[in-house]
Amino acid sequence: MPQRRSHVAPSAAQTELAAALSGLRDNLDAPVEFPAAVLAEAEKATASTPELDLRDIAFATLDPEGSRDLDQAFHLERDGDGYTVRYAIADVPSFVDPGGAVDAEARRRGQTLYAADGTIPLHPKVLSEDRASLLPGVDRPALVWTFSLDSAGAVIDFRLERALIRSREQLDYVSAQASLDRGDNGAVTLLPVIGALRIEQEKSRGGASLNLPDEEVVRTSDGTYAIERRRPLPVEDWNAQLSLMTGMAAASLMLDAKIGVLRTMPQPDEKSFDAFRHQTEALGRPWTTGRYGDYLRELDRDDPLTLPILEAAASLFRGAGYVVFDGTAPVDAMQAAIGAPYAHTTAPLRRLVDRWSLAICLAISRGEEIPAWARDSLNELPALMQESAQRASKLDSATINCVEAALLTPFVGTTIDATVIAVHDGRATVQIADPAVTASAPVPTGTAAGSVVRLSVRSVDIAEGKVELVP
Image (cartoon, rainbow, N blue to C red; front, side, top):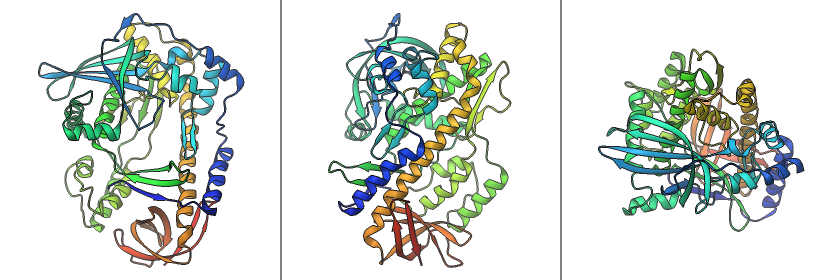
Protein backbone atom coordinates (compact mmCIF):
# COMPACT_ATOMS: atom_id res chain seq x y z
CA MET A 1 0.00 0.00 0.00
CA PRO A 2 1.52 3.34 -0.99
CA GLN A 3 1.27 6.23 1.43
CA ARG A 4 -2.21 7.76 1.46
CA ARG A 5 -3.25 10.83 3.42
CA SER A 6 -6.84 12.00 3.82
CA HIS A 7 -7.31 15.55 5.13
CA VAL A 8 -9.98 17.22 7.18
CA ALA A 9 -10.48 20.52 5.39
CA PRO A 10 -10.41 23.77 7.42
CA SER A 11 -13.99 24.36 8.49
CA ALA A 12 -16.37 24.07 11.39
CA ALA A 13 -15.50 20.36 11.33
CA GLN A 14 -11.87 21.27 12.12
CA THR A 15 -12.92 23.34 15.12
CA GLU A 16 -15.17 20.58 16.42
CA LEU A 17 -12.45 17.99 15.83
CA ALA A 18 -9.82 19.99 17.72
CA ALA A 19 -12.16 20.24 20.72
CA ALA A 20 -12.94 16.52 20.56
CA LEU A 21 -9.25 15.54 20.44
CA SER A 22 -8.43 17.82 23.37
CA GLY A 23 -11.26 16.27 25.37
CA LEU A 24 -9.88 12.76 24.91
CA ARG A 25 -7.01 13.51 27.27
CA ASP A 26 -9.34 14.48 30.12
CA ASN A 27 -11.32 11.26 29.75
CA LEU A 28 -8.16 9.12 29.87
CA ASP A 29 -6.63 10.38 33.13
CA ALA A 30 -3.49 11.06 31.12
CA PRO A 31 -2.25 14.54 32.07
CA VAL A 32 0.26 16.19 29.78
CA GLU A 33 1.85 18.26 32.52
CA PHE A 34 4.07 16.76 35.23
CA PRO A 35 3.77 17.65 38.93
CA ALA A 36 6.24 20.27 40.11
CA ALA A 37 8.14 17.76 42.26
CA VAL A 38 8.67 15.50 39.25
CA LEU A 39 9.96 18.35 37.09
CA ALA A 40 12.29 19.57 39.86
CA GLU A 41 13.77 16.10 40.35
CA ALA A 42 14.18 15.60 36.58
CA GLU A 43 16.03 18.92 36.25
CA LYS A 44 18.58 17.74 38.80
CA ALA A 45 18.92 14.18 37.49
CA THR A 46 22.38 13.20 36.31
CA ALA A 47 24.08 9.94 35.44
CA SER A 48 27.65 9.01 36.34
CA THR A 49 30.13 8.81 33.49
CA PRO A 50 30.78 5.19 32.43
CA GLU A 51 34.32 3.85 32.60
CA LEU A 52 34.08 2.37 29.09
CA ASP A 53 34.51 5.01 26.37
CA LEU A 54 33.04 4.16 22.94
CA ARG A 55 32.90 7.69 21.55
CA ASP A 56 35.19 6.66 18.69
CA ILE A 57 32.42 4.38 17.37
CA ALA A 58 30.26 6.16 14.76
CA PHE A 59 26.81 5.37 16.15
CA ALA A 60 23.70 6.63 14.37
CA THR A 61 20.00 6.73 15.23
CA LEU A 62 17.07 5.85 12.97
CA ASP A 63 13.58 7.04 13.89
CA PRO A 64 10.52 8.81 12.47
CA GLU A 65 11.34 12.28 11.20
CA GLY A 66 11.45 14.92 13.92
CA SER A 67 11.80 12.49 16.84
CA ARG A 68 13.56 13.74 19.95
CA ASP A 69 13.11 10.78 22.31
CA LEU A 70 15.88 8.65 20.80
CA ASP A 71 16.14 5.31 22.61
CA GLN A 72 18.49 3.42 20.29
CA ALA A 73 21.65 4.01 18.28
CA PHE A 74 23.45 1.43 16.15
CA HIS A 75 26.77 0.73 14.49
CA LEU A 76 27.21 -2.04 11.92
CA GLU A 77 30.42 -3.45 10.50
CA ARG A 78 31.73 -6.52 8.73
CA ASP A 79 33.86 -8.93 10.74
CA GLY A 80 35.46 -11.49 8.44
CA ASP A 81 32.62 -13.56 6.99
CA GLY A 82 30.25 -12.25 9.66
CA TYR A 83 29.23 -8.99 11.26
CA THR A 84 29.49 -6.98 14.46
CA VAL A 85 26.37 -5.13 15.56
CA ARG A 86 26.53 -2.58 18.36
CA TYR A 87 23.14 -1.48 19.67
CA ALA A 88 23.20 1.30 22.25
CA ILE A 89 20.14 1.91 24.44
CA ALA A 90 19.48 5.10 26.42
CA ASP A 91 20.68 4.58 30.00
CA VAL A 92 17.41 5.59 31.64
CA PRO A 93 18.03 3.50 34.80
CA SER A 94 20.96 5.79 35.64
CA PHE A 95 18.83 8.94 35.43
CA VAL A 96 15.82 7.76 37.47
CA ASP A 97 16.08 7.62 41.25
CA PRO A 98 14.26 4.45 42.43
CA GLY A 99 11.40 5.44 44.70
CA GLY A 100 11.70 9.09 43.70
CA ALA A 101 9.15 11.41 42.15
CA VAL A 102 10.12 10.66 38.52
CA ASP A 103 9.94 6.92 39.20
CA ALA A 104 6.51 7.17 40.83
CA GLU A 105 5.08 9.29 38.00
CA ALA A 106 6.52 6.94 35.36
CA ARG A 107 4.88 3.97 37.06
CA ARG A 108 1.57 5.85 36.97
CA ARG A 109 1.92 6.61 33.24
CA GLY A 110 3.42 3.33 32.02
CA GLN A 111 4.30 4.48 28.52
CA THR A 112 4.41 7.50 26.24
CA LEU A 113 1.05 8.17 24.62
CA TYR A 114 0.94 9.56 21.10
CA ALA A 115 -2.03 11.87 20.64
CA ALA A 116 -2.91 13.69 17.42
CA ASP A 117 -2.16 17.05 19.02
CA GLY A 118 1.06 16.04 20.77
CA THR A 119 2.67 13.39 22.94
CA ILE A 120 1.96 12.60 26.57
CA PRO A 121 5.45 11.48 27.60
CA LEU A 122 6.48 8.86 30.10
CA HIS A 123 9.26 11.06 31.48
CA PRO A 124 9.71 14.84 31.61
CA LYS A 125 11.13 16.14 28.34
CA VAL A 126 14.30 17.35 30.02
CA LEU A 127 15.11 13.63 30.26
CA SER A 128 13.24 11.99 27.39
CA GLU A 129 14.07 14.58 24.74
CA ASP A 130 17.33 15.95 26.09
CA ARG A 131 19.58 14.62 28.83
CA ALA A 132 18.91 10.87 28.44
CA SER A 133 18.11 10.89 24.71
CA LEU A 134 20.79 9.67 22.29
CA LEU A 135 20.83 12.91 20.34
CA PRO A 136 23.61 13.47 17.79
CA GLY A 137 26.81 15.30 18.60
CA VAL A 138 26.62 15.01 22.39
CA ASP A 139 28.12 12.56 24.88
CA ARG A 140 25.61 10.17 26.41
CA PRO A 141 25.81 7.21 28.81
CA ALA A 142 24.28 4.16 27.17
CA LEU A 143 23.80 0.45 27.68
CA VAL A 144 25.57 -1.06 24.69
CA TRP A 145 24.79 -4.53 23.36
CA THR A 146 27.55 -5.92 21.13
CA PHE A 147 26.61 -8.88 18.93
CA SER A 148 28.88 -11.14 16.89
CA LEU A 149 26.96 -12.63 13.95
CA ASP A 150 28.06 -15.38 11.58
CA SER A 151 27.70 -15.19 7.80
CA ALA A 152 24.06 -16.32 8.07
CA GLY A 153 23.18 -13.63 10.62
CA ALA A 154 22.96 -16.01 13.60
CA VAL A 155 24.17 -14.69 16.95
CA ILE A 156 27.44 -16.34 17.94
CA ASP A 157 28.05 -14.26 21.04
CA PHE A 158 26.91 -11.04 22.70
CA ARG A 159 27.70 -8.87 25.67
CA LEU A 160 26.13 -5.90 27.48
CA GLU A 161 28.22 -3.00 28.83
CA ARG A 162 27.63 0.48 30.13
CA ALA A 163 29.56 2.96 27.99
CA LEU A 164 29.90 6.59 26.97
CA ILE A 165 28.91 7.11 23.33
CA ARG A 166 28.44 9.98 20.88
CA SER A 167 25.94 9.49 18.05
CA ARG A 168 27.12 10.98 14.76
CA GLU A 169 23.85 11.11 12.79
CA GLN A 170 20.13 11.35 13.41
CA LEU A 171 18.53 9.55 10.46
CA ASP A 172 14.85 9.25 9.60
CA TYR A 173 13.17 6.36 7.81
CA VAL A 174 12.24 8.16 4.59
CA SER A 175 15.63 9.73 3.94
CA ALA A 176 17.48 6.56 4.98
CA GLN A 177 15.40 4.50 2.55
CA ALA A 178 16.05 7.02 -0.21
CA SER A 179 19.77 6.89 0.52
CA LEU A 180 19.77 3.10 0.26
CA ASP A 181 17.75 3.19 -2.94
CA ARG A 182 20.35 5.53 -4.46
CA GLY A 183 23.16 3.21 -3.44
CA ASP A 184 24.80 5.77 -1.16
CA ASN A 185 27.26 4.55 1.46
CA GLY A 186 26.67 5.53 5.04
CA ALA A 187 25.61 4.36 8.48
CA VAL A 188 22.77 2.23 7.05
CA THR A 189 24.77 0.57 4.27
CA LEU A 190 24.83 -2.83 5.99
CA LEU A 191 21.31 -2.57 7.41
CA PRO A 192 19.61 -4.27 4.41
CA VAL A 193 22.19 -7.07 4.50
CA ILE A 194 21.97 -7.77 8.22
CA GLY A 195 18.24 -7.09 8.32
CA ALA A 196 17.56 -9.61 5.53
CA LEU A 197 19.72 -12.23 7.26
CA ARG A 198 17.83 -11.70 10.52
CA ILE A 199 14.51 -12.07 8.67
CA GLU A 200 15.78 -15.42 7.38
CA GLN A 201 16.64 -16.33 10.98
CA GLU A 202 13.07 -15.39 11.93
CA LYS A 203 11.74 -17.72 9.24
CA SER A 204 13.85 -20.58 10.53
CA ARG A 205 12.52 -20.02 14.05
CA GLY A 206 8.96 -20.14 12.79
CA GLY A 207 8.38 -16.48 13.57
CA ALA A 208 5.65 -14.42 11.92
CA SER A 209 5.12 -10.71 11.23
CA LEU A 210 1.68 -9.23 10.66
CA ASN A 211 2.87 -5.98 9.01
CA LEU A 212 -0.52 -4.31 8.75
CA PRO A 213 -0.35 -0.87 7.13
CA ASP A 214 0.28 1.90 9.64
CA GLU A 215 -2.69 4.11 10.45
CA GLU A 216 -1.78 7.38 12.12
CA VAL A 217 -3.47 10.69 12.77
CA VAL A 218 -1.09 13.51 11.88
CA ARG A 219 -1.25 17.26 12.26
CA THR A 220 -0.17 19.01 9.09
CA SER A 221 1.84 22.23 8.75
CA ASP A 222 -1.33 24.31 8.25
CA GLY A 223 -2.81 23.03 11.52
CA THR A 224 -5.32 20.63 9.98
CA TYR A 225 -5.60 16.96 10.84
CA ALA A 226 -5.25 13.99 8.53
CA ILE A 227 -5.20 10.20 8.64
CA GLU A 228 -2.11 8.74 7.05
CA ARG A 229 -2.05 5.11 6.04
CA ARG A 230 1.11 3.63 4.66
CA ARG A 231 3.04 0.42 4.40
CA PRO A 232 6.21 0.36 6.55
CA LEU A 233 9.34 0.96 4.50
CA PRO A 234 11.85 -1.89 4.14
CA VAL A 235 14.35 0.06 6.24
CA GLU A 236 11.86 -0.01 9.12
CA ASP A 237 11.55 -3.80 8.95
CA TRP A 238 15.35 -4.19 8.88
CA ASN A 239 15.78 -1.80 11.77
CA ALA A 240 13.13 -3.66 13.78
CA GLN A 241 15.19 -6.82 13.45
CA LEU A 242 17.99 -5.22 15.48
CA SER A 243 15.53 -4.50 18.27
CA LEU A 244 14.10 -8.02 18.14
CA MET A 245 17.60 -9.52 18.31
CA THR A 246 18.34 -7.43 21.39
CA GLY A 247 15.07 -8.40 23.06
CA MET A 248 15.84 -12.08 22.53
CA ALA A 249 19.33 -11.63 24.00
CA ALA A 250 17.86 -9.90 27.06
CA ALA A 251 15.38 -12.74 27.52
CA SER A 252 18.13 -15.35 27.37
CA LEU A 253 20.15 -13.52 30.04
CA MET A 254 17.17 -13.29 32.37
CA LEU A 255 16.08 -16.89 31.81
CA ASP A 256 19.57 -18.17 32.58
CA ALA A 257 19.62 -16.08 35.78
CA LYS A 258 16.03 -17.11 36.60
CA ILE A 259 14.87 -13.55 37.22
CA GLY A 260 13.28 -10.97 34.97
CA VAL A 261 10.28 -9.98 32.91
CA LEU A 262 9.36 -11.40 29.50
CA ARG A 263 6.94 -10.35 26.80
CA THR A 264 5.08 -13.55 25.92
CA MET A 265 2.39 -14.58 23.46
CA PRO A 266 0.82 -18.04 23.12
CA GLN A 267 0.88 -20.05 19.94
CA PRO A 268 -2.53 -19.85 18.20
CA ASP A 269 -4.66 -22.93 18.81
CA GLU A 270 -5.97 -25.20 16.06
CA LYS A 271 -9.41 -23.60 16.22
CA SER A 272 -7.88 -20.21 15.40
CA PHE A 273 -5.77 -21.70 12.62
CA ASP A 274 -8.81 -23.45 11.13
CA ALA A 275 -10.86 -20.26 11.20
CA PHE A 276 -8.06 -18.35 9.47
CA ARG A 277 -7.72 -21.06 6.81
CA HIS A 278 -11.44 -20.80 6.05
CA GLN A 279 -11.14 -17.02 5.75
CA THR A 280 -8.24 -17.26 3.30
CA GLU A 281 -10.21 -19.77 1.22
CA ALA A 282 -13.23 -17.46 1.17
CA LEU A 283 -11.00 -14.64 -0.04
CA GLY A 284 -9.56 -16.79 -2.83
CA ARG A 285 -6.03 -16.82 -1.39
CA PRO A 286 -6.00 -20.13 0.48
CA TRP A 287 -3.33 -20.97 3.02
CA THR A 288 -2.86 -24.68 2.41
CA THR A 289 0.72 -25.60 3.34
CA GLY A 290 3.64 -24.36 5.39
CA ARG A 291 3.76 -22.14 8.44
CA TYR A 292 1.46 -19.16 8.75
CA GLY A 293 4.43 -16.79 9.08
CA ASP A 294 5.74 -17.87 5.68
CA TYR A 295 2.28 -17.48 4.16
CA LEU A 296 1.94 -13.93 5.49
CA ARG A 297 5.42 -12.95 4.31
CA GLU A 298 4.67 -14.13 0.77
CA LEU A 299 1.43 -12.15 0.34
CA ASP A 300 1.47 -9.62 -2.50
CA ARG A 301 1.19 -6.22 -0.81
CA ASP A 302 -0.28 -4.75 -4.02
CA ASP A 303 -3.13 -7.30 -4.06
CA PRO A 304 -6.37 -5.61 -2.83
CA LEU A 305 -7.26 -8.81 -0.97
CA THR A 306 -4.09 -8.73 1.13
CA LEU A 307 -5.51 -6.19 3.59
CA PRO A 308 -8.59 -8.33 4.42
CA ILE A 309 -6.26 -11.33 4.87
CA LEU A 310 -3.98 -9.42 7.24
CA GLU A 311 -6.99 -8.17 9.19
CA ALA A 312 -8.16 -11.77 9.52
CA ALA A 313 -4.67 -12.86 10.60
CA ALA A 314 -4.80 -10.42 13.52
CA SER A 315 -6.74 -13.11 15.41
CA LEU A 316 -3.53 -15.21 15.42
CA PHE A 317 -1.58 -12.48 17.23
CA ARG A 318 -3.59 -12.23 20.43
CA GLY A 319 -2.86 -12.90 24.07
CA ALA A 320 0.42 -10.98 24.44
CA GLY A 321 1.33 -10.10 28.00
CA TYR A 322 4.13 -9.80 30.54
CA VAL A 323 5.41 -12.64 32.73
CA VAL A 324 7.65 -11.94 35.70
CA PHE A 325 9.73 -14.56 37.50
CA ASP A 326 12.25 -14.76 40.33
CA GLY A 327 13.89 -18.04 41.25
CA THR A 328 12.12 -20.26 38.71
CA ALA A 329 11.93 -19.72 34.96
CA PRO A 330 8.36 -19.60 33.57
CA VAL A 331 6.97 -22.80 32.09
CA ASP A 332 5.98 -21.06 28.86
CA ALA A 333 8.46 -18.33 28.02
CA MET A 334 7.80 -18.09 24.29
CA GLN A 335 6.65 -15.16 22.22
CA ALA A 336 5.01 -17.14 19.44
CA ALA A 337 5.14 -14.46 16.75
CA ILE A 338 8.88 -14.07 17.28
CA GLY A 339 9.49 -17.77 17.71
CA ALA A 340 11.68 -17.33 20.80
CA PRO A 341 11.65 -15.96 24.35
CA TYR A 342 11.67 -12.18 24.16
CA ALA A 343 11.83 -9.13 26.42
CA HIS A 344 11.00 -5.47 25.93
CA THR A 345 14.32 -3.76 26.50
CA THR A 346 15.04 -1.23 23.72
CA ALA A 347 12.65 1.67 24.45
CA PRO A 348 13.19 2.80 28.07
CA LEU A 349 12.42 6.46 27.31
CA ARG A 350 8.95 5.50 26.11
CA ARG A 351 8.04 2.28 27.93
CA LEU A 352 8.26 1.62 31.67
CA VAL A 353 9.08 -2.10 31.67
CA ASP A 354 12.29 -1.65 29.65
CA ARG A 355 13.98 0.10 32.59
CA TRP A 356 13.59 -3.08 34.65
CA SER A 357 14.85 -5.32 31.85
CA LEU A 358 17.95 -3.19 31.32
CA ALA A 359 18.80 -2.87 35.01
CA ILE A 360 18.43 -6.63 35.53
CA CYS A 361 20.40 -7.55 32.40
CA LEU A 362 23.25 -5.18 33.26
CA ALA A 363 23.54 -6.65 36.77
CA ILE A 364 23.57 -10.18 35.34
CA SER A 365 26.23 -9.24 32.79
CA ARG A 366 28.43 -7.73 35.51
CA GLY A 367 27.92 -10.63 37.91
CA GLU A 368 26.35 -8.27 40.43
CA GLU A 369 23.30 -8.53 42.65
CA ILE A 370 20.02 -7.57 41.00
CA PRO A 371 19.11 -4.04 42.19
CA ALA A 372 16.73 -4.29 45.13
CA TRP A 373 14.30 -1.77 43.62
CA ALA A 374 13.95 -3.89 40.46
CA ARG A 375 13.56 -7.19 42.27
CA ASP A 376 11.12 -5.88 44.87
CA SER A 377 8.80 -4.27 42.30
CA LEU A 378 8.84 -6.98 39.60
CA ASN A 379 5.37 -8.24 40.45
CA GLU A 380 3.86 -4.77 39.91
CA LEU A 381 4.92 -4.56 36.26
CA PRO A 382 2.27 -6.67 34.46
CA ALA A 383 -0.61 -4.68 35.96
CA LEU A 384 1.08 -1.33 35.36
CA MET A 385 1.79 -2.17 31.73
CA GLN A 386 -1.68 -3.59 31.12
CA GLU A 387 -3.29 -0.43 32.47
CA SER A 388 -1.11 1.81 30.29
CA ALA A 389 -1.73 -0.38 27.22
CA GLN A 390 -5.47 -0.01 27.72
CA ARG A 391 -5.08 3.78 27.92
CA ALA A 392 -2.99 3.83 24.75
CA SER A 393 -5.43 1.62 22.86
CA LYS A 394 -8.39 3.71 23.96
CA LEU A 395 -6.66 6.93 22.93
CA ASP A 396 -5.61 5.54 19.54
CA SER A 397 -9.00 4.18 18.61
CA ALA A 398 -10.94 7.21 19.91
CA THR A 399 -8.61 9.59 18.05
CA ILE A 400 -9.00 7.76 14.75
CA ASN A 401 -12.77 7.51 15.22
CA CYS A 402 -13.06 11.28 15.74
CA VAL A 403 -10.91 12.10 12.72
CA GLU A 404 -12.72 9.61 10.50
CA ALA A 405 -16.05 11.17 11.47
CA ALA A 406 -14.65 14.59 10.52
CA LEU A 407 -13.35 13.24 7.22
CA LEU A 408 -16.81 11.96 6.30
CA THR A 409 -18.67 15.13 7.31
CA PRO A 410 -18.73 16.55 3.74
CA PHE A 411 -20.17 13.22 2.48
CA VAL A 412 -23.31 13.13 4.66
CA GLY A 413 -26.28 12.46 2.40
CA THR A 414 -24.14 11.00 -0.39
CA THR A 415 -23.14 7.47 -1.39
CA ILE A 416 -19.65 6.05 -1.37
CA ASP A 417 -17.90 2.81 -2.37
CA ALA A 418 -16.17 0.65 0.23
CA THR A 419 -14.27 -2.65 0.24
CA VAL A 420 -15.43 -5.28 2.73
CA ILE A 421 -12.59 -6.40 4.99
CA ALA A 422 -14.48 -8.79 7.27
CA VAL A 423 -18.10 -9.80 7.96
CA HIS A 424 -19.58 -10.88 11.29
CA ASP A 425 -23.24 -11.24 12.28
CA GLY A 426 -24.59 -9.12 9.45
CA ARG A 427 -22.15 -6.24 9.90
CA ALA A 428 -18.98 -5.62 7.98
CA THR A 429 -15.73 -3.83 8.62
CA VAL A 430 -15.28 -1.78 5.46
CA GLN A 431 -12.44 0.26 4.00
CA ILE A 432 -13.26 3.47 2.13
CA ALA A 433 -10.42 4.50 -0.18
CA ASP A 434 -11.02 8.25 -0.43
CA PRO A 435 -11.24 9.59 2.20
CA ALA A 436 -9.25 6.80 3.86
CA VAL A 437 -11.72 5.61 6.51
CA THR A 438 -12.27 2.22 8.14
CA ALA A 439 -15.80 1.83 9.47
CA SER A 440 -18.55 -0.62 10.34
CA ALA A 441 -21.77 -0.99 8.38
CA PRO A 442 -24.68 -3.42 8.00
CA VAL A 443 -24.44 -5.42 4.78
CA PRO A 444 -26.81 -7.76 2.93
CA THR A 445 -26.72 -11.47 3.72
CA GLY A 446 -24.11 -13.23 1.63
CA THR A 447 -21.76 -10.27 1.35
CA ALA A 448 -18.22 -11.64 1.20
CA ALA A 449 -14.91 -10.20 2.37
CA GLY A 450 -13.10 -8.59 -0.52
CA SER A 451 -16.26 -7.43 -2.29
CA VAL A 452 -17.12 -3.78 -2.97
CA VAL A 453 -20.37 -2.36 -1.54
CA ARG A 454 -22.16 0.94 -2.11
CA LEU A 455 -22.98 2.75 1.14
CA SER A 456 -24.86 5.88 2.10
CA VAL A 457 -23.33 8.20 4.71
CA ARG A 458 -26.36 8.87 6.88
CA SER A 459 -24.81 10.82 9.78
CA VAL A 460 -21.59 11.59 11.65
CA ASP A 461 -20.83 12.71 15.20
CA ILE A 462 -17.29 14.08 15.52
CA ALA A 463 -17.36 14.49 19.30
CA GLU A 464 -18.43 10.88 19.82
CA GLY A 465 -16.38 9.53 16.91
CA LYS A 466 -19.40 7.85 15.37
CA VAL A 467 -20.29 7.28 11.73
CA GLU A 468 -23.56 5.79 10.48
CA LEU A 469 -23.34 4.02 7.13
CA VAL A 470 -26.19 2.09 5.54
CA PRO A 471 -26.47 0.09 2.29
